[in-house]
Image (tube, rainbow, N blue to C red; front, side, top):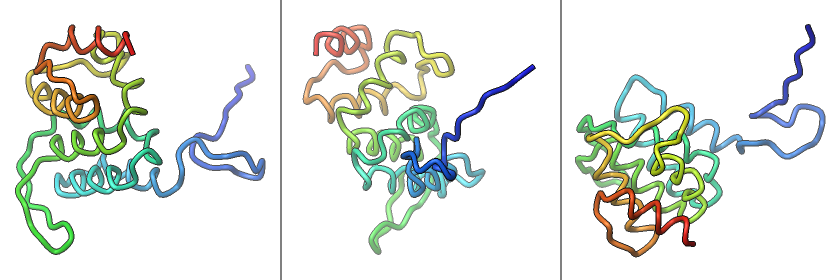
Length: 149
């Protein structure tokens, strides 16, 4: 049997553009940390990259229900937050490119993630900030709105 594989995270010797830029890949790896503070900080930093971090959106969606309180220091100031809140903020900073990844979640057709009670607030917050619309946690209305765009 013959298997073909493409490099998702490196350009190898082909010179082709990478699927996930190296700085984004490093931060995505940190979203899997066993330490909640590292997960929150990785999401925060992905958000700071803006649209450049659009390939991190599926990983940020996975974090939306991560509601473990953590104390993080950003720019010399500390704040209580959760990895899920930081993922929500990052999605809103990435902006419209994240919507293509969010729609399958809203339609309950995402292959790996489904909306649960713990992620509703964070998901609704990100959608509100990206769109300027307010449908709360009525994800059917959010999906309808997204499809109309």
